[in-house]
Amino acid sequence: MARGRRRERPRGAEPKVLARNRRARHEYEILETEVAGLQLTGSEVKSAREGRVNLKEAYVRFEGGEAFLVGCHISPYEQAGYAQHDPVRPRKLLLHKRQIERLASKSREKGYTVVPLALLLDGNWIKVEIALVRGKQLHDKRETLRRRALDREAERAMKGEL
View 1 (cartoon, rainbow, N blue to C red):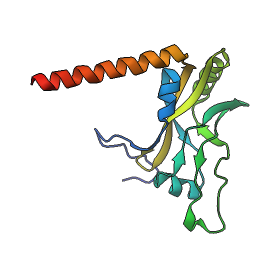
View 2: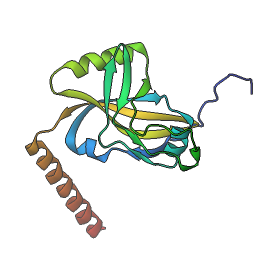
View 3: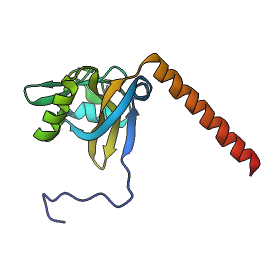
View 4: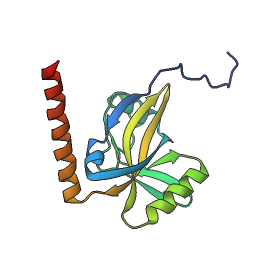
């Protein structure tokens, strides 16, 4: 294989999920999703590969034509020694300029924000799945839970018939 050429992922190979933001799917209505690269230090990569990541309080902030993941907690890596990282530092997202401008303009509208849904391991690259979301009202959350319960009951009834 020639040096410098990027090897493509084998067909059907899905990225491994390192961390998931379950709360986001409950709290928000997901409008559209993107996958972005994440600029990390070496100790952050090793800690993330171990799954020591918390996305619960995280969101995306746009500053000066760049996107940053804020509030994401990546625990310090024990074997890093003196080269430790700040667990909650803002981390730069690697997106194309047009993607950043489009998401930034949509997130400026009232009620919209951009939050991470999952941290993925795609080959040797750590990426984050982000989503443009709108906050759900309490009655929307109740409706979602009610619909999920009805779907579960229907699945059980169908299994009982077979």
